[in-house]
Length: 159
Image (cartoon, rainbow, N blue to C red; front, side, top):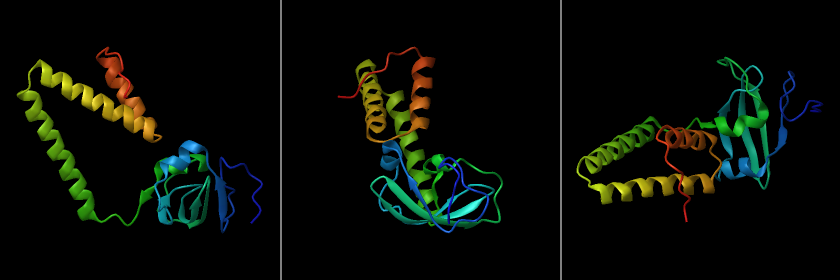
């Protein structure tokens, strides 16, 4: 079980269990409970099973996963967790809610005046700022900066 490689990558030999220390932002990105089977491709594709998740450590075992296409650095595995057991119905409900929300925004934008528009913009900016303050999300951060830069709007800070 000895692994003389760094935590950035996994040795090519199969390892039964790995104890991986996480930085604070990665710990906050994992919502409890995170114990269970998660799909993650590491080192030519592995199936990771999280055994323990507490403090700043995640312990998981892994085995070869036959459908692997490429590998990812081990230290970034938190960002690519995908629960295997999310039912298709739940995914459809999430997509349906997003579609409903998008349509509500279209209606609100169509019939709002300057004051209502300012309220909508400020609310969305604060929602994004609060989300970024609460959790590590480089994708959200990059996307929000892209929008702000595109429209040359100075970023507001949530209170």
